[in-house]
Length: 286
Image (cartoon, rainbow, N blue to C red):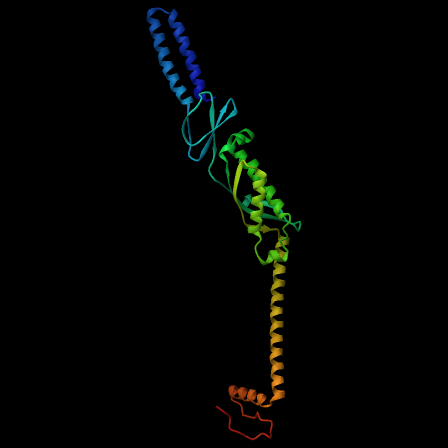
């Protein structure tokens, strides 16, 4: 029951006592008692008006309770008339953004039995029709955040990352975090039920332990070395094919080799000694 209602009850009792005393008092005292009772009664009516009205803030959901239990009535933002014996507790109906970063990152266990710190953000919102039940179960909005959303977020992330191997080749080729974030959102939505709407879960970064980080760096170096070796192999094969083609051309027409020799001599400014006959001195080509 609101405090203003308790004050009204006390003032009403005092006013009634004043009237009763005035009935048995002398004329001068009787008038004073009646006047005092009227003043107290007017003040009591002011407190009664406060008890019978309430103002719910913007983006808030008002939970109407009677003697500590929800009546099942929820109030939107604005001014409302209500029973003077009921209280209204507000719960935040706006979209909530919880960020777990820096020292508040969530520790998860990975599929290779190592651990990592996940930088996570989650957007969620309570559903207005579920507000009375949430109030009955958790009493305060902070308890909803801690015991319903954050705790189940930790469980969902550990379920997702338990099957994630950071050393798998497919996870080295591209970032798996967007897909893991979607899986975590679906699991979290299932765990919190229909009382809270999970809008989004994002895992932008994850910090592995030192051992896993070193293994990832080593694998990336080996993959880079393998790529260089494969490229060198392809270059050697291409060069061998070109040489084979040249040798085949020479075997069919010796003038091909002469033409190649002339090209080299022209580039380097050498004497033109490229014909397969007895060499004859010539003037170098400039």
